[in-house]
Length: 116
Length: 115
Image 1 (cartoon, chains in turn cyan, green):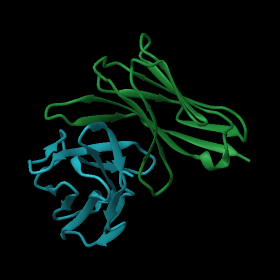
Image 2 (image 1 turned 90 degrees about the horizontal axis):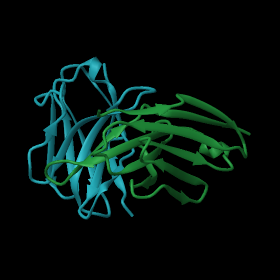
Image 3 (image 1 turned 90 degrees about the vertical axis):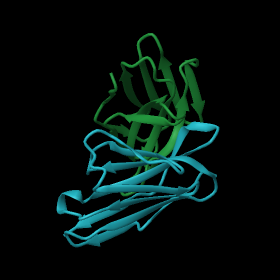
Image 4 (image 1 turned 30 degrees about the vertical axis):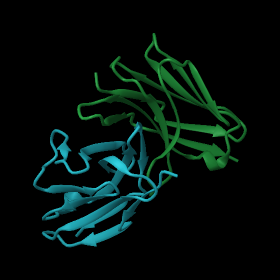
C-alpha cells in the first residue's frame, strides 16, 4: 500500500512554455501533498505543502506565480511550472501523507524536467 | 534550528560489513525521525522511522539508534549488500499548523557496497 505515482516521468519543454506535472496517490487518500525539488547529488528541497481543497503553502523563496500547485482532490495534486526557463530544469518529486498517519510521507518516482 | 546534519557524505563498505550513517538535530520539537533510501533517478522510499520515546528500532537488517539527550540518531545496515548501494537521507519532522507534517532532510549519504 501507499503508492504514489507521477506523470510524466520526464519532460522536455522549450523556454517560455508551461509544464504540468501530476501526482496521484493510488491506494490511499492523501490529505496532504508536498512538492520537492532536487538538484543532482543534492538533498530534497521542499517547495510547497498543499492540503486538499486549500491553497498551497509555499516555502520562502519559492515563487507562487511560477510554480502553481493545485490539490483538487484527495488523490491528485498538480504542479504547473509556468514560463519555464533553463534554470527550472530539475528533478521534481511529490509526496503524500494520509489522514491518521500524517507523519509518514510516501514519495512519487519523480519527474525530470529539462527546459531547452 | 531547522537543520538536520548528516554524516558522512559518502561511505564505502565491503559486502557483509556494517554501514553506519549519523544524523544530528537541534530542534527539540522534532518528534519523528525517518530514514529514506533513494536510488538514482527514483523518488525516496521510506526505509524505517523512529519516535523519540524509543531508543532503538530494528527492521530486518536496518536499525535506528536514537539518543534523545545528545539529539542524535543513526542508521545501521547490517550485512550490507551491493543492492544497498544508494543514497540515504535522514529526516526529522514536527507537526505544523493545519495538522500536516513538514520534513527536514539531511544532505544525504551516498553508500557504496563493494562485492
